[in-house]
Every structure is written in C-alpha cells, then in structure tokens.
Amino acid sequence: MAEVTLTIDGLPVSVPSGSTILDACRAMGNDQPTMCYLDTLTPVNVCRVCVVEVEKSRILVPSCSRAAEHGMVVSTDTERVRHSRKMVYEFLASSVDLSLVDRQTVGWMKEYGCDPDRYGPAAGPVDDRDERVAGHHHVGDGMEAETVHQPVKVDNELYVRDYSRCILCYKCVEACGEDAQNTFAIAVAGRGFDARISTEFDTGLTDSACVFCGNCIGVCPTGALMFRSEYELRGAGLWKEDSQSVTRTVCSYCGVGCNLELHVQDNRIVKVTSPIDHSVTSGHLCIKGRFGYEYVQDLGDLAVTPIDEVLKRARVIDPEVSGRDDG
Image 1 (tube, rainbow, N blue to C red):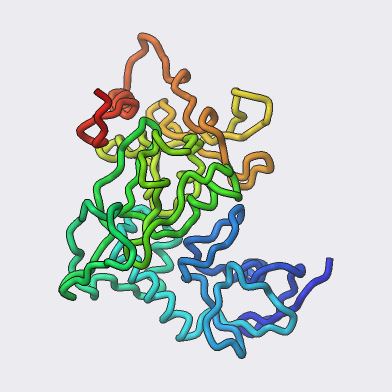
Image 2: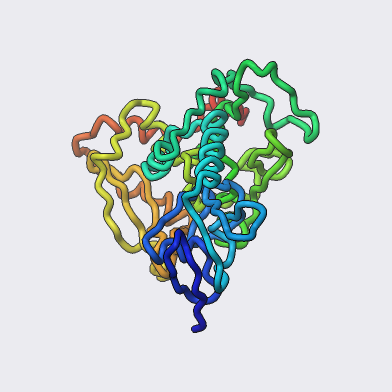
C-alpha cells in the first residue's frame, strides 16, 4: 500500500495513503483530543476540538477527517491551536452539563486551562426547546450563560434522554443511520443554539421508528443517552462504577456471535455494552443483546441486594415522569 510522509510537530511520520492527520498523530504516539470522533463512525467535524494548524492553510483543520498529504507540515500545539481548543471546551461546558464525560476529556480541559464560569452563571432550565422554531432564538440579557438544560425524557423502560448533556456530536445520529443500524429514527432539528436531536415530528420514542437497539447509547460521549438502569441507580445514589466488574461473553440469542460486556454490581447486571474492537459488532448490538438480560436476574428466593428494588423500578414507566397518558 502506498504511503505518504508528512511532518508533525517537527517530526516525520509515514502512514498509509488515505489516513487522516489524526491517524498520523496517533501512529507517532501524539494523540489529539476528540469528542465527536469514533473509529467506527463517519467523521462529521462538528466538535472542533481536534483542530490542528497546517502550513499554508488559512484556517485550522479538523485532524479527524482531513486526509494526510505527502509533504504536509502540521502543528498540533501552537498558541492558535490551544486557544481554539480552549474556547470550544469552554463554550460547551458553559451551556452543557459535562459532568459525566470521560477522564481523558477532563484531562484535556485542565491541560488548556478552561474556565467556563467566566461566561457568567448558568441560566435556568427551559421546557420549550422542542417547540422552538428555527430563526426565532431568544436573545438573553447577557448576564447569564444560556444552557441547553431541559427536563430528562423518560418515556420507555430501556433508556433515557438527558439533552442537558448533549453536545450535538452527531454520534447517535450516525449510529442510528448508515454507520450501524440504518433505522434513521433521529436527526438534528432546529438551527444554531436551538439545534437539538429529535425524532421525526418530535414524537415519543415509543411512537417513532426507534427499534431500541441502544446503539446510540453506546456511542454517546457525555451521558445524554443513558441506560434506564444506570439513570435510576444514579438517582438513588447507588451507582458505583468503580466497584463494577466487566465480563466479556458471547450473546446467546442467535448465532451471529456478538460479544457482550456485562457490567455487574452487587452480583446484578446493571448494563450491557459491546467492545468497539470486536470484528462482529464494532460495539453495536440489537435490542435483545443489549437489553434482554432480565432472565439472568431471576434468582428466586435468594437474598436481594439494595439495588434490586431500583432495577425493578427501572422497568416501569411513571406517567407523571414521562408525560405520557396511557389510560
């Protein structure tokens, strides 16, 4: 395979033709921050935290999608790059709840000295974001940092949508679309600050094209999409990720061979994921593989754990919480 040679931060590196700048950076152990990028999804270039400086380029370019070219001279840690990344992180953190992002993202924010509080106190949550019309954005008084906070959407037994944590990375849209599920149940609605992830005509998930595969949860980097079990346990103060064990096994529902990662706490399965590097799944599963584990929890008369009641409650829809009226 043909290779291209470029220079990154003063050091030469050769990568296969068709590689991106990010691929080249990683090949030499020079990783870059990303939020909207995932190896198994098509890059959409929306978060802009991976931007780098390319010689003779007027603007900073996204390393996750820009192809590496022979003779290219790239700088990943200039003052211009650092300032841009800091601003992106600060804008996101001032309007979105990033409390559940991974430790690597937290580390990058510390690296760039981010201070989202300098934009002022966060404005209160709103409940009309789904009804806002493009082009009619309300201009604030400049004394508060407007946020995307809104009530959590709890309309099914499997997962919840907390869009106060959504950074519009498009990962869920890509996983629901051509990159994995091909269901196309969700897309971006609205424009500008009022843009948000939505089903068609903002219908509830149970009435939409959603097949509840949960692949959107598997790629979400901020916790905006969360297993109902995790959501309920966090709310009860019983979610203890550091004490959970993860066991890799093969799904028993069919013969495809999907690998599962069972997250176990107090001898109970609290959620199921799939390894992104597995050749069969690439991290994706169907509804049975991701959510069909309740039969394992039927332990008869054995002693229960403190989380059993919470997990049981996670399988029930409260009309007052979901806003649904099934009567």
